[in-house]
Amino acid sequence: MKDTFILGIESSCDETSVSIVKNGTEEVATVISSQIDIHKDFGGVVPEIASRQHVKNVTMVLESCMEKANMTMEQIDAIAITYGPGLIGSLLIGLETAKTLAFVYNKPLIPVHHIAGHIYANSLVKEMTFPLLAVVVSGGHTELIEMTKHYRFNKLGGTLDDAIGECYDKVARVIGLEYPGGPKIDKLAKEGKDTYKLPVPLKDDSYNFSFSGLKSAVINLAHNEEQRGNKLRKADLATSFQEVAIEAIITKVRKAIIDKKIKNVIVAGGVAANQGLREAMEKLAKELDFDLCIPPMKYCTDNATMIAAAGYYAYLDGRRADMNLNSKSQDELR
Ligand code: KG4
Ligand code: ZN
Image 1 (cartoon, protein in one colour):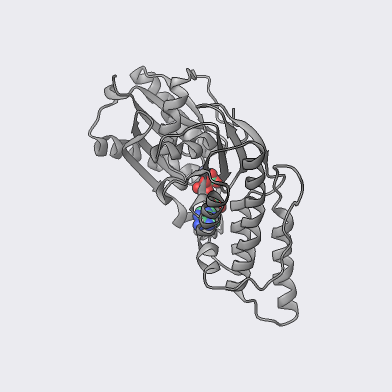
Image 2: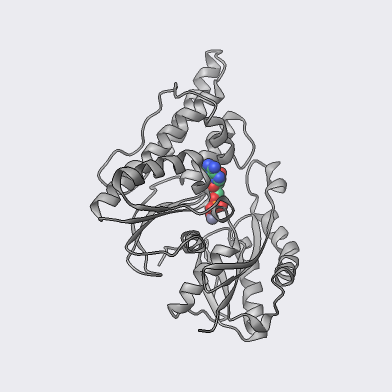
């Protein structure tokens, strides 16, 4: 069978990335230009700065990916693009680039939901088998998605307020850690003890999550310690926070696996890089006897490899977009 090469473009937040993936499973070449160092000074991503950086970088990133792959546009079968969700100004830069390429080289344009990309990062690691549960944990999402076949997504539940990654980043800020704080909390959590009492969020019968109460509890705790003149034990707070945050996720994941008789679980999104979550998921896999796949760190955070991989399955599913495709800051995964 002829190989299919998909060129993916991702620019939904602060990474400009282009990648070529063969048959949805094999990375040919990827280039990522990260803006983290620029946004760090502001304590978070500044949308206007992000879009300007994408404009500056996208052609360079595209050219260097083609060079790295040693391929020409004629060899590409389709262009996959993150159309949303994300920062609208940032998304538009990738989208216009993708549209231009599709138009000039007469290639199909494949719209990819950012979360589908995170889920399909797993297909670069091993074959995805169904039914499966995707645990999506990122800066903007915390969702449990059931899949019975390729490119069919059934949302079981999600966060009612803050996403888990967002909560990590806010807690990090309270502790005085630089953006993005998630990985820094994860590291610090290894050094502390679970001594601070924090509330376990949303103990109900749904598959939903809520992290704003936990976030507020941490802010209040830090504030109270300061008022009492007590030194905040940062490592202990990181450990206590991580314990509760992960327990909240694991409780709902356990329920979904049991209720839906799931045998395959994948973890997707930036927070899949979290060491504590990885360990807790591995423990759960032993307890409930399911196959677990967590992509390596490089595929967990935003990249175009996952968009090209998802794009391949979207392509097989017959999904196409025309020149009217628009970016969406919010959109349900369908
Ligand atoms: O998926 P992602 O790259 O961007 C979105 O699509 O949102 O996720 C970024 C999020 C940030 O909130 C970052 O702090 C968090 O993932 N993150 C982590 C870790 N690595 C990244 N959170 C906790 N522990 C980590 N090791
Ligand atoms: Zn992401």
